[in-house]
Length: 150
Ligand code: ADP
Ligand code: MG
Image (tube, rainbow, N blue to C red; front, top):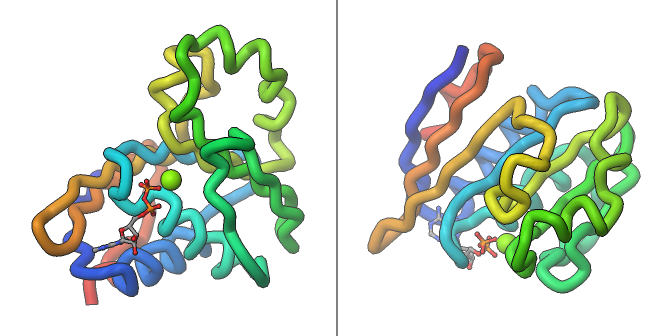
């Protein structure tokens, strides 16, 4: 079990935390990303995707709801459910099949899908500080996170 709180002083620290998390992700996992607009959820996802070998842009899926990346380890789906008005939209959109043992799913605003989403293997919460962010990570699994704060 993991429960960890870390201070991320700037964007580089968020990207560094992402690289440490990335190497511990496995196919089939679901990661929830909670936090207000501008908290750093998409920044963390960008860091994870780049650490897992994606070259190029990471577009926020605010309008498309999902952006998918064919990574070396397998497909990675990045969701942003911010625009959902009702949890039923998640079911209707047909995303359930993306959550399977052969993919990794990173979900911003998971609360917008209510309890319809598959449960998270790792939950991340961001709090915004006047300068920097606080990152809270919890998981049933043991994660090695000591190196996040440099
Ligand atoms: P979200 O997806 O949560 O809405 P974004 O990742 O799109 O947020 O935007 C976060 C903003 O905050 C970006 O401008 C990014 O550069 C900045 N940022 C990311 N991490 C930190 C940090 N640890 N400290 C300060 N600013 C950060
Ligand atoms: Mg975002």
